[in-house]
Length: 235
Length: 289
Image (cartoon, rainbow over the protein chains, first blue to last red):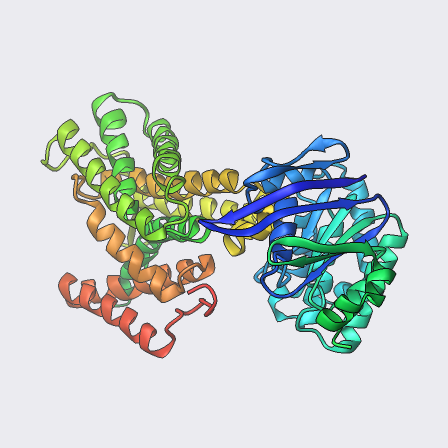
């Protein structure tokens, strides 16, 4: 397993945000976490990237314990997080945002190549290279957030609600990009409100309900599961 | 008349120089730390007392004393970060109150160490650049102007062109997202505090031979700096510099042609007008105000 999360609990003050969640991410796959608002999807992802301290349990990445590491050290281990709401740096240019993603890297020549790759993948970012990030549309900002994450050369990409607030055409575009990135060997954990989209993209899925994993299984099986269809797919 | 205008213009350039050094430091600290540093005027005062102790009392060469003053006040900034702002990270109001406490401690230390009297500092240089009989720029003032130009250009280069400068701006704009890029927020906070405090310190050190040095000199400096950053737009470095120049021009000209009290009133009115017309300040944006 690339990433293994065992019996994780996270508290916000006295409230248990997640109680007991175990998630395994095999190398090269897309794993999705779906569930209702407040089920603990974002908290689970934030625990993985060190943004949320865990109360109990353990997280290992490539065989090393990474829980209790601060967020900026976890990036160094090869996990990049595209946060909910994109969180690009609004008053920095597109290029500065992307280069900030490579903050920890010392291989200057390879960074230039990777920047070129990001621009090839997202031609619109190249056009807007010197523009301030806050002046871009939601879809472009999402692309920038993904590009910025790729600039750290991660082995695991955590994505929180990449489809949020975007027009259907753009959602389709983002979905394609996630697939492409994964085909090139990057493992992905995808948290999505849009369960239909998530189950279509993912290899394996977890369903969270009120801070616990309620269900898990191969994405296509869950897609046909009656409970999932009724509760999350609205069919 | 023309000569008086030219002379007042030179005075304004000098005032703009030290005001912008102080204000830019204050903005940098506010941006990265999210706290209003009320002790900023006392950091300026500490820089001035470094000159009293090193240059006036111990006869260390002036520019060596200025350099030591810069580093010393920068280290005071690091101390504030570690002792006050880091423990109060999730409590910006607490940070503000703690900075007021630190202000009082610094004032008390200055009184204990040097007394409440005004310090006499021997002039660094008597040289004057005379453009004409009535238009003269003392070289000691020129030092302040040159320092402001050099340091603010260096800061601009650092923030816009270097990796650590981007890291600083990124943590000012979104600390959590910055941490997700591998940037240590504690590290950027330290850098911001050192630079911000150091700029106030060097402004205090360079102006020390030109003003009356006393333990309460920080007060008028911080009031001016607050006016300037509100006019410029809280959080905007460009705004702080532009507003420093505007404020210095208005204040110096009103002082020269009318009097100093009226100049203070006009300065405050300037701030009120900006707050009414553009509440985010000249260069501020709504999301940062």
